[in-house]
Length: 330
Image 1 (spheres, one colour):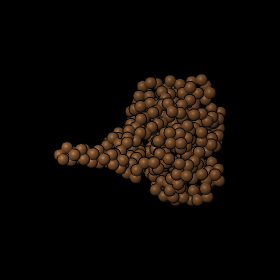
Image 2: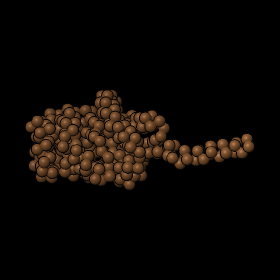
Image 3: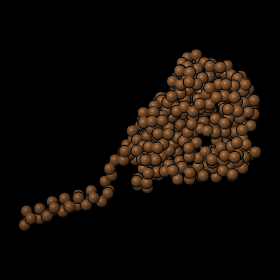
Image 4: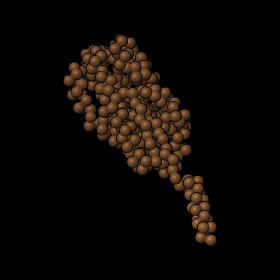
């Protein structure tokens, strides 16, 4: 009788373990691939991804594991966003090329000299512009929850630029953003859209003679090797976004969805501070490599750039201009 009871006990234990495993209370590890086209560690664009990895893995207590790729290993910005929509990449950075593809009719942030500081952009994100941008991304299978600030975009070139006329005939690399082409043409420049990973080689081979990016990006690419000057044009407050795959998020538990989105927002705040803290150090290091920094009077540049506003008013949704002026207090 004791032997029979013993067998029954073991059987009951095994049945219990089976139903415990089948009940879903034990979790399989969720694996994520996150990536950027930015080339080097040591700046907010790449270090931020590692910060995100650390936050998510810690907060999920190991239930989510992340692999980080950078330097265009998985493709440029456009390729990464397409993989994001398919769900093969779960998070990537989205810049001006992405915004030009999905939300260009509802964002005013890319008009040179229109927004002079990050506070104005943040106010617009809290209002209708931010809500419309989020909805537009969601319609394309992308979860968007704001931006981080990389500093202002600056011109690098081999010309000693002091006034807008010095830009006449300049072959300048731009992201794949049609709106920017309009503005740089107004300066008399010759814009050439070239993917981000090809910037250095294009400058080195003379395909273009100038480009524009924030200091951190110029440092990443060691542009002192192919450019003499950084002209502090401060023409755009540069922003990046953490984009999450909606296809991936929809497969996760509510707990994990909330965790992944919150970690992206927290990391973007971290990136903004990291970039601001690093910029002065990067400038000094680039100067040590021979890069010269020029500080022209910006008012003539502002006048030319804002002279293109009629073009943007026609391409934006009808409500965007009025909302922008309200945000800027104009």
